[in-house]
Length: 449
Image (cartoon, rainbow, N blue to C red):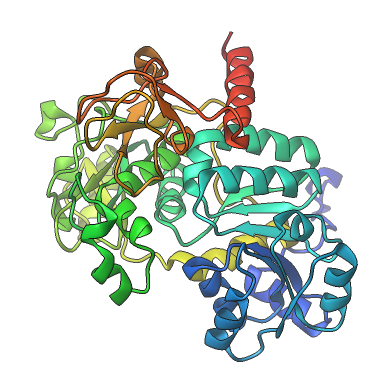
């Protein structure tokens, strides 16, 4: 039988897997060229991991202490480029052409370099991450944002700016948000609603934690004490769950989420509606478990009610339903990030980003009493911790976004445990992320008017 013209197979080339595409780039001498901003723990991991891969390499890196590159390359070994300090665009280009890792204190030089195809921010500082993203997008570079704190503050705006510039803006693979989004997309691709998505919290939950209490542990784990405390006091969990909410259209069920000690095998019994024995006042939420054995994994709960489907799920030893837990037992943090850089360049693929209108916000709760005139420190230090809210709750309460807190000035006395608001705190007017947040909010007002 003759095939109808509309049924002809497409003549477009078959899309390679990312592994095949990287192998082809390696074979043809066209590796994905990465510019890295931040050579701390995460940046060192990225330099090390790209050294284990074919078809991708870090060719330029920026850090306020360029000498850190020597230590990172020494740890990475293998095929990593030898660092060379550069103070101008010309020096940077010549170093890359000579097969060296061009290292500079200037993030702008890295973002503007013709040789760089994709930029990764690994600084962990919201203000820096937002600035780097805008520099990269303005220079028509793809942007991989490891700085989830910046993303939950201005990610919707950055994604729209990237679209306008014709480049990809994406969070980085390996962190819990993208690992959870893989499950969310899997469930929705099969046609089922997602009741909840989240993670296991992988550190003790101590809301009053401060860096002085964790310096020894941080040193043992080769971590910055501030970063460790951001995990311990729950700020990172709040940030990660809000990133999932904004990308998937979910919300925290209650401010701060529930965070029960839900065992891995019973996640679907906890994260289901109250009328069916669970904790939830609504479907479609983000949350986390503090029970041992859930971290470092992530989960998503699906509702699957069709009798035939439930019969099959029972045969597969996945339970009686109608709620089922889908679980990924690992996330490889910084080690997976190069895959997002490669996917952005090769396939123009975004692994995860906020929707145009975010559904949730990370606010701040005071860790101690705060007095007028006091300037706020960084996330993971002594003044405040992150706190998840639905966007509606955040707007109604005038919540100060977490990413705007550093350097802000307290204008009214704030009691321990109280929510920081625009009425009690004035953000630093010189901070780039503050200006971006104003543009972000103006765009949302136009979209939702």
